[in-house]
Amino acid sequence: MSPLPLPRLMIEPLVRNALLEDFGLAGDITSAAVIPSGHRVTLQMVSRQPGVVAGMDLAALAFTLTDDMVSVTRHLGDGEPVGGGTVIATIEGNAQALLAAERTALNFISHLSGIATSTARMVKEIEGSGVSIACTRKTTPGLRAIEKHAVRAGGGMNHRFSLADAVLIKDNHIAVAGGVEQAIRRAKENTGHMVKIEVEVDTIEQLHVAMREGVDAVLLDNMTADQLRDAVQIVAKRAIAEASGRVSLETVRDIAATGVDIISVGWLTHSAPILDIGLDVL
Image 1: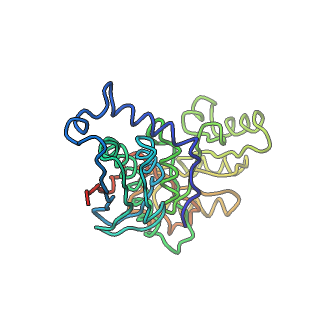
Image 2: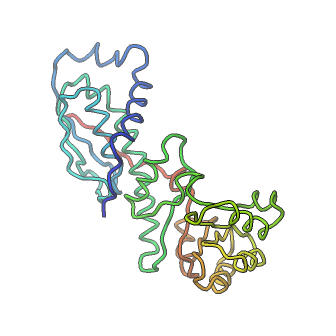
């Protein structure tokens, strides 16, 4: 299923800033020098390898912001699978404008499609388990919204978008507050009834305290499969059980088999390899 598109109001500043960064103080002096003014060209955006598309809106906007007379025909949209050699979009217009926008467009769609592709592979690895794959706040500064959008395009779900979305009590909060019990109690005293509370636990002992105090979710951090199974039995559906840490394509199926509800994966947004996408002149 394709994710809901992000509003243009959110993505246009990102694309404009990326274009301005690439244009420097004089624009694309190579295209201006080499390509005759007014020359038109047709380009095809082609995937060099199989994956899942994400970032089509940003790529298209890179071209149309450079020249509003450019025509972009999309053959695939965000969330759709793509094979190697598949044409994703056809772009027609002023050659100087298209070549000036080429790298910005490809940077966005290659990076975001890479995130969607990695997410889709992990989701497929645990297909049928009933467990969800979630991203984290380990995102590129300034690109969080579009990177999390790419996770959704790959079939994953989003964790917090910001610190203000929910309370997540982590190890340093616990250390400063004086313990799990103190941290949870202070969180309940100082937040409204609409705010969910999750607490990170490293040990079964901390988990028992968290469940006694009552929380909406527990983040089971860097636990072994045996520890996760024990933790799931202790939680007993009284809270959402989220596993995090040591998650890879090789380990995710074993983690899902422990019975947790969610597996959160930081590398989906901070380290996923790009999907190789190019732009060819017809």
